Image (spheres, one colour):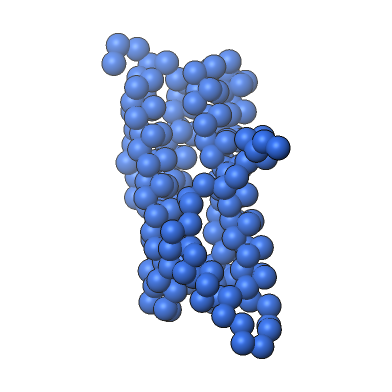
Length: 180
């Protein structure tokens, strides 16, 4: 690349986010394996698909950093956290990971705005929208889990939820995209 078109501070923040996305993939992989081992193959399959999505996010950041004349730095990924205690705990922890990720994306967008780095600001908007979608998705799954796990005699809802997540979309519905 002939010239670097992102600040050193932005390059550092983007690299940090790239590593965060790789870590997110690790978490989804670990929790997917945990779900599968605990007889929730559908939830495991859903989380494995999400792991691939997080890796795509990581690669998107890598390409952007390099394309803007920076240098993507591949760093070690920390170990995924301990296994959740149950499906509800798993889903709550994943939602919190997404909320934390949203905060980190907001830091990138805020710095881009401060620096008047409109290319990175625009690039960051894709991730902002993605995070809105992720939080919406996990909130809706938690709502379904809460409904499914309510004690009712002969309840087969958890089985149905697990089955449904095998083919569930990896995207949440955004209110601004809905029509009447």
